[in-house]
Image (cartoon, rainbow, N blue to C red; front, top):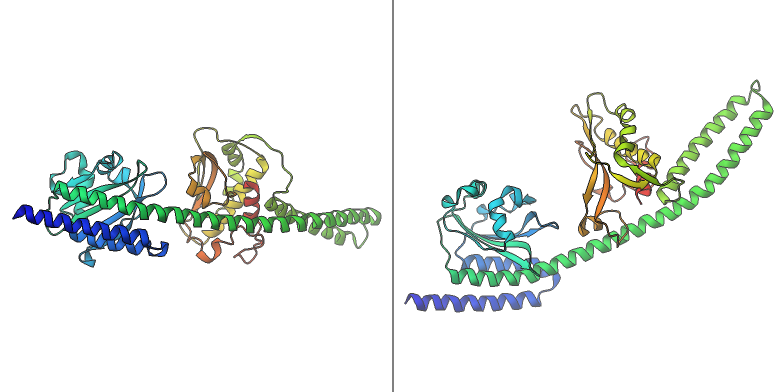
Length: 407
């Protein structure tokens, strides 16, 4: 009788897999998430679980997000709490098994080995008594995992059930990979549009700045000749000096516009980025609010780049001044400036202001962070546009010039 029941369950699950497979193949991209949710519901019920979920790994393979979840009781949901998990640090024993593409089957969480103490505490926090987790593998690489939790009672899954659930996991991989490809394509297209928009702004700004700079040269030249002809005692002498000062300030604005457009004058040479930032540290600290502090975290090793040292100092000053203004009203204002070298993956390049198609392994960086309120979403797309500013007296050229230097 037991054998007949197992055979019937096996046939039922086989029919379920066929149904899910057909559903996922025929589904439009906009239906992909709904398909995964439907599959989790059916798989969770088959597995006799209280929770069924999918985690996907971010690029780099160490940070996981709970992207899909089904619960027999909505009160059991953990999805909101399980985002951005550094699994190699938070769950080292578990993740070691996942990296080896092994199924993790824990009939009793309390019986976990001593080396899994972090896992025991985490599973207890989620009220998990038993769990089964299947690695999701694409082209031999771990890209996530499919899991089932039993909360109400301890449970042991049969080897046949595990095999069937592994097959189900492979069905989910196809949808998840399609999601990933579509997401990357959308991000690349968005990055391309943003780059083209900034490029067109740069061409316009550069052309205006170049022509305006020529006019300012003539103004300064004529003012200088007039001042020399009139002499220091003439009543108009001070007025001409003011004309020259205003023209010099206008010329500074044109230099910032030319920097944004990439047409500024600079001298490229090998330099240590940390040294360039350190040179202006004392000057920059004077701009910090009295109640605040600036922390400098320079790389232990030289951060060698090819660039203009004065421009690097200007980049640091512009970034830090923005950060200081963001926290100027806080009693515990803190700004941190960090230099170093890091690796950027494809997604990081796509999400940045690098030109589309940029390939980079290691990049040098200056990072300026603060504990201010953050940037409103509606302002983020305009951050680097020339003349965009949220400050009453701002000119909106500081970050524009930073972008031009970096480009």
